[in-house]
Length: 513
Image (tube, rainbow, N blue to C red):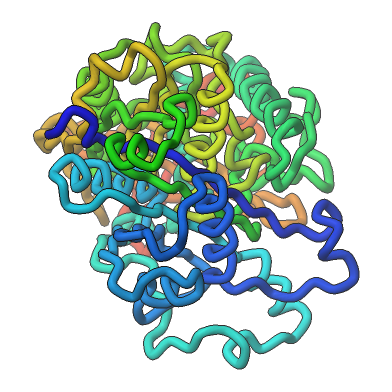
């Protein structure tokens, strides 16, 4: 690699289109197609870097959830007036995509394949849902696709067949399992833990309140986040709505990346060049019930160690941090893996996080990268760490950026960490069995009217195997699971797998108060 053939970020652009906050939309809103949001963010980033569309040699795009494209790269390039000959890069769907795509571009640049690239992503779920409510037929307005939306693109489903059969099918069902396991490991009561995580999220919301691109620029107190009200209803215990990522947004972001040599040749001042120091990615056991540890992530730990080593820094050197924050448990698992205290004074977000700044599908971390770049340029620190996370805390990519003296100690490359399955995968997951065991984790699902509709359990059987099942959803059962007084995790249960569903019931209920 030539002396300055490493990747540097030289331009950033963000777009938010929310009626009520963006005045030009008032009274004349219309749906925003993803490639048009991408176009606007790309043009903003190119203008920030003073780079012409014709100069772009490579284009990486995060796959949007809102709309299918037969050729995402070609459609985006055409919309943004980029050369039809751009080298194109996409990644399998997941919130890790921004980090992994950045790593691909950085490594290709270090190998001398191209000198100028754009990395962009967006989401238009707000447009999709509002258009549906208003009876607007987007198929008549947006780019047609010859095939339906494929949310997996060759990847396994988020959860196993046995989990899905028992109602665990989406992130809102799964991350609460991690959260309850984290509480039990910390030895907190339910009330104590709700205070801890609501304070964590309150600090994030305070950052969002200062972010001009945040979807919800409101600072909430811990009490406003933790207290269940009609507009902050339960989703799945222990998360009220304000602890959940909000995907119903129209947002986009883009980076212009080039080699340091190219940036110097163009006369871009060094203080506007934010250097990619290094990164790494790793994958945990795929589905939650297959995970070795419901309260931790070996993959984040391994990726963090590798990324810091490649960047030539330690966590003590990092000034700015943005940890993927779809749910509080994702933040806490990352903090534990990186050795951060729950009240680290540096904070854990530069945007406000997915619940408040907005959760634009797979591309959230691009917004973090944009803000981190701007703050490093302004002299607000020398090193920034941004984490990207996909699926149910399954896929992880960590990226480090820097300015100043830290640049010389980095190798400017990213690596994939291959973890042994014994490190990430838990005990065998069995179905249709009858026997006793202990609760490893659980959640309670609520409907939109605030009524509990399902209890779900992960159980470690006495023979060491693991299973999942559903339990009673009576008022008494829900009270025990959501307010104690005893910790439900670790309590003995009986599983009856003789029917269509595995049924879980506590043993000796009188002992639980």
